[in-house]
Length: 247
Image (cartoon, rainbow, N blue to C red; front, side):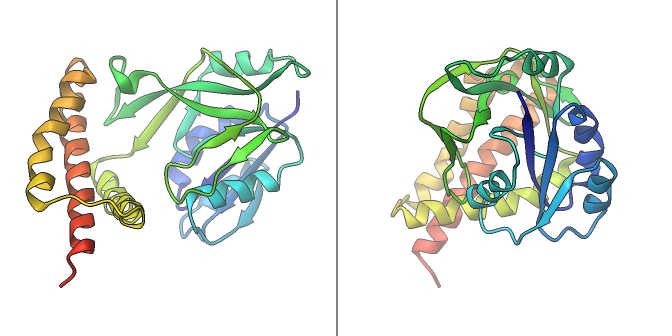
């Protein structure tokens, strides 16, 4: 089957150097760029990508736009910081079109501070990344967008390696953006949480990520990741509290 890859990007030159070489087998690569100031566009051009410039207005709408520019009905959506494994590439290339399956979930493996997370939730969390747009598309959610499919969904075994952050500095660049988006989403839904509850939730989230999600098995990087995730949730709800109680 013919496949169009869609990627949304902003200042993703570092990641595209790793992800695009693994996509040369696809029939087309569409990159929707949000006015990058680094070499994102130049690198995308060097891999013969089709490039569109569009101001970011939410993950769902940005990805829906990318899908609308595709020439093929089968869409492979990946983030700029994700790299397909050789096993996954071969698995996708062996899929026969014309089956009743309308979409495929693909397992994603987290890579953080150079550590491949082989244990726990982050070692194999599934995302619907390959789908036939005749039977579904992304919703318009600002963040945590999802593909909704009318039809049968199957699973692939090959992995996508998710290189979320180059380093801790990069993590905190994204941290403020995502906590703000998350707090705004909760605010619009009318959610509320007391200040004491916001602060007291930190150890609960840490225990959840470090013990329940078994990140203690992922070395010191698993410890750091659990701490940062607990802090992320805490700050998100503190921002919600601030929106509910403006000065």
